Image (cartoon, rainbow, N blue to C red; front, side, top):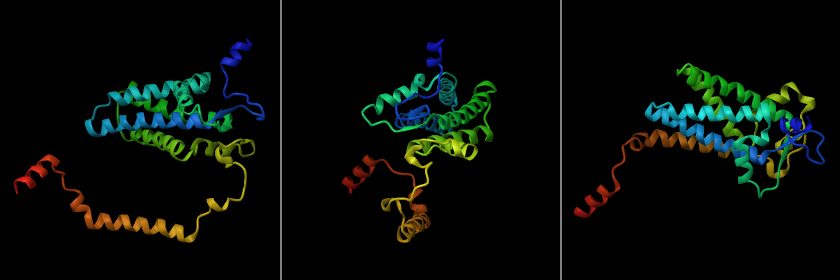
Length: 223
């Protein structure tokens, strides 16, 4: 019975932590891999109208999430792969409860996509929107280390949140290196304006179809 309990559980018990925890570094690595798979699959749909790869990707995604939530994150293929990739990095422990809440959201979303795309064999704005939401969740996790699902958890269980990535659960004054001056914010505004000016001035030029480099070289040599 104890062996079964150890197999089916969520999070690991680490000395110094009073609740089960997970390694945020391997979670982030796994999110990056899943994001890449889903993103490429969606690009294939956009450019070729072929949904085969996306159906496989959704099935794989759903299977991995089911293992994480219903069995044990230790047996998730993508988390194992993430662990292998970041095995030389110092673990960054995060509370398991908020991660479970976040992954339940992922389970619901991926189940909906699987039903619409694989079972019903359909496509439409609902499927596209849910895929986009999944991509946003994965991107924020891997690029910024921000678990959006964990943010939602804190709305419902504010007093129970512990061990968030970057200690964001605890109210602390930001260090000087984290503060943003008015001039830095002005730079962001100026850069956005710069991008808009480039679009306005060069859109027609940038929209031209590129020529083969070798043809350009041959034409130049002949001249």
